[in-house]
Image (cartoon, rainbow, N blue to C red; front, top):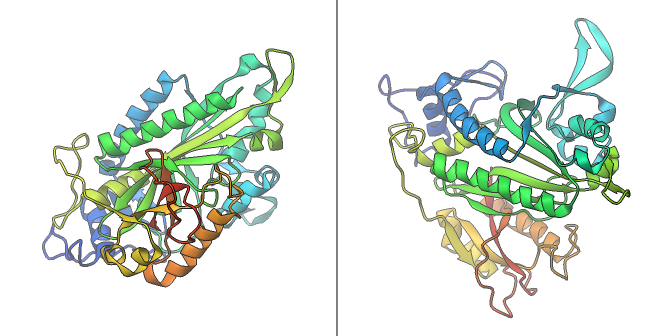
Length: 405
């Protein structure tokens, strides 16, 4: 991939052809496809890309569908500023620690140093919630359901990849507040289903809907649901989109309270959810071939069939010594973790959390470090007495594991 902001030189055998095959050098193949397919042009700042009209037209198709669907749910569009004050950004400690390495800062105006640096939003929870506190007073102000289409900046990472890992990207982010947890829980799954539709019905990419572990959930949230896709040529999973229930943590931090219908003071329940232009990269990785860009039915007229991606694992030796590693598959394994059943503390420090850390450590050299991807909502039968594939403790659920972008 491109580095140090320099434009990628793409070698061609012909004016339109690719110089490498998808199976021979996936990274080079992908770089050539996104350029030769006129999806992006490399920019002179590393990790930033020009989205050409072909890519934008695909984004707009998904945007049109999603925007219409959320408006049916009475979710309204808005726009909040790109800049964030340090005081607001740092108000929710657990949340900002998850993003701190990626925050870009404006420190100068012309030749003058700013007295107080200004952050560029990596996400908008801390941008929007002070105003939720201002706008919500009573139960008649709820639910408050907002969405914005915007760009965000996340700076601190190496090896940027067009659409997949870029320093600036387009997304939608929804932020909502409810009087009850039940309402919030319902919306989380409704939004997740829309994300599934985008991947499976528009992009023809199979995804798995599930719940992230405590260790992998959104920083500061109550729980995270996800749609996970799989890139067969690399053996890696990729997080497609997430829908988070934030619980009442942010409501407590930002004092988002309301008077309920009994005249009592209560805190709201909140959600946030987002998908990005990563969707386009996943589509290209899954459907592209040695001739170049291949687009799915609702984007173009070319159809693609799905691929078998999952190996079932019951014992650790299968994970590291069998065909799973050779074939670079995602694994569906019996696990002792979870946090929603007794025996795990639910904070990532019980048996489940220890297994996650152990699996990462033990697979680092063998598989490029596997991690838990999600526990699918559609759970296979778990026979009584089944033991965790890694710890030997009683298993509580089936969970997908694998390397991930």
